Each structure stands twice: as structure tokens, then as C-alpha cells.
Image 1 (cartoon, rainbow, N blue to C red):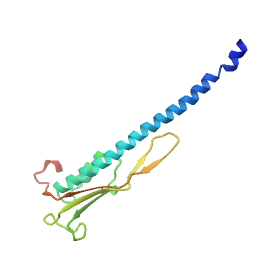
Image 2 (cartoon, helix red, strand yellow; image 1 turned 90 degrees about the vertical axis):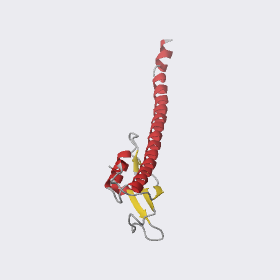
Image 3 (cartoon, helix red, strand yellow; image 1 turned 45 degrees about the vertical axis):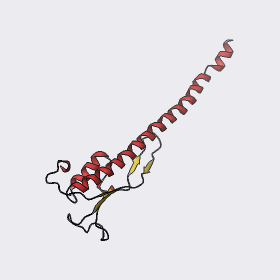
Image 4 (cartoon, rainbow, N blue to C red; image 1 turned 180 degrees about the vertical axis):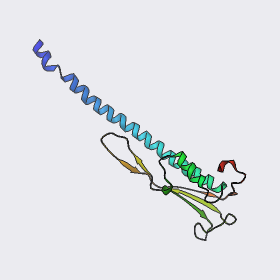
Length: 145
């Protein structure tokens, strides 16, 4: 009887190690997918916020990019493009009086995974929001400060 027990003594530990490795891999995958969805949503919301601020604040106000970066801290100014539109004229050729819309784009944002032993970076697709012009003046607008 003791000989049979001694040959089976490590089987439970091996089975536990296999089951745990599968479980923790699945758990890390679920957590990482949740982080990716949160980042995707934050990028969308940062783009919407930037477009909203661009139509109510002064043209090229530095606070627009700052508030977008506050929404998604890993953003850089290089990821953000703000275009003031006056169709059919070229982009960024309008003035406060002639602009008809603002387009804010977020491109080239890279999401870094936190999975151990697997350094993986995903580049999110571009996000764009276009809104019609409003008053474009920060003077009496507390949102712009």
C-alpha cells in the first residue's frame, strides 16, 4: 500500500501546476483584454473631448491637447491632430470668423500589454471626431481654462 502511495505522491502537484498555468493564462488574458477595451474607450472619449473643446475654445488653444492627454495619460502631442475646416478651402486656412468645423484625430497610439515574459504592443486604429463650429472664444468660457 505504501509503495502505491509513493508512486502517486507527485501526481496531484503536477496536475495542480497544469491547471493553474491554464487558469492564470486565461485570467491574465481577460485582464489584458479589459485594459485594452478601457484604453480604446478612453481614446474615443479623448478625441470627443478634444473636438468639443476645439469648437468652443480659441483656435489652437494649448489646453485642448492638455485635457486630451489628461484623459489618456500615455498620449503625446504627436498623436493628436486638430484641423480647422472651411470647405472647400484647404485645412487650417480659416479664421475664427470663417471656420465651419473642427476635426480632431488621434493616430499612432500604442497600447503596451502587461503580460509577463511577452512584450507586446498594439497600435490602435485612428480615431476622428468632427464637430460644427460654435463660438471659438475662450474669454468667457470656464471650460477652456
